[in-house]
Amino acid sequence: MKKYVLISNPEKDAGSRIAKSAAALLQQYGAETILFLSDEKIPSDADAVLTFGGDGTLLHAAWHASLWEIPILGINVGTLGYLTELEAGELPLLAKLASGEYRIENRMMLSIDVLRDGKNVFHEEALNDAVISHGEIMRVIPLTLCCDGIEVKSFRGDGIIVSSPTGSTAYSLSAGGPVVDPLADSITITPLSAHALYAKSFVFSPERRIQIVIGDLEGRSAFVAGDGRNVFPLSSRDLVTITRSLRKTRLIKIKDESFLKILYQKL
Image (cartoon, rainbow, N blue to C red; front, side):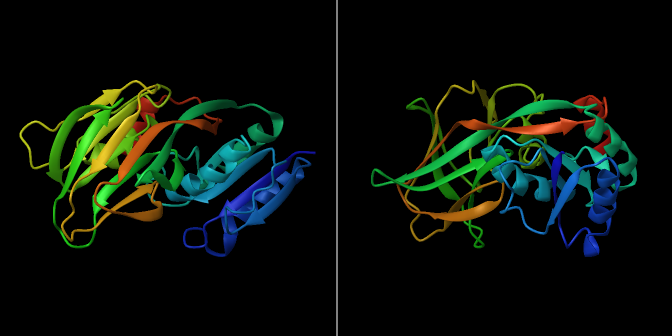
């Protein structure tokens, strides 16, 4: 018997109405379903995780699901839902999930670490991106971008985005970054409103070690977050390191649609 974990975002799926409809449908095919309103109790023996919300709901679940290599199927109950596979009106297509008529896309993830005085004080894994940005007070922060220990560019600005191929169509795209094939392996760096003439996006091999040195903040505030989770305050001379994660997010694909078609439809 297949075991499916259904994660419903109560702010998007009021009363878990759509999630409960999906559960009833899957139960007709002999599956066991478990409904959660949180992503922190995903059992390691689940066959798949289904999320009901938007991209944020899927991103939060990806962290836990990737720990056990459990595939994820997103059902869009939000607005954009770029990462989600199905719309709320396409629940009958879950029959293909039950019958095994789907494929898995392995998506690269990022590993984020903050070193302070030689000690690791923060760690996170992210599917979309790692974002360093200033606080609520709109003051530029000094940053130095390095790759494999070699300085690439120093600048002052609102921050910097380090994205995976999947995350290239998220915040990075809004900041002027390139669209990257989500099945490619690469790391894209996009400065945020850099106060410099030449501070454009960089695309590096996933084997590279990206390092961002936080300059003297002089009373300014700066933060780092992976996929918007666990926002961590940074200090002057902190070293933020981003590398390819050992984890992967396994997305369930039921419909045969290219990412270019989805990009056109959603954006």
